[in-house]
Image (cartoon, rainbow, N blue to C red; front, side, top):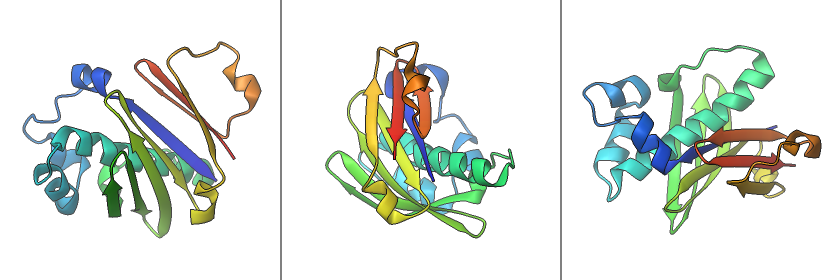
Length: 154
């Protein structure tokens, strides 16, 4: 099973002030906050970690039918960033989700999977012109934020 999340970086600036007091404490554990505050681009790291958590949560909630988004229970780890790509894992209770993220100046997009090999099989379509009939293409996971729509197929 797969999940995905996209963050429109321009829209995120408008919608969220992640620098306000207490914001990071509600979403990120100490290790994740260290990754955010000690890096070269803290804002990008916030949205990278957020999209990892969100994409893993989408799988968990579909599998368990439990709708409790508790970001502190989702723990990002094993994060490796190289150029415009990142890989990592997200732990949630007893589950582990594998993630692959891509980013550029406009967005951060993460795909999560229950098995590492599923990440190698996905096809992704990201568009800023969402066709009204995109659901007819039967995507396995859909995410949208701001100007962007991300469709993921297995």
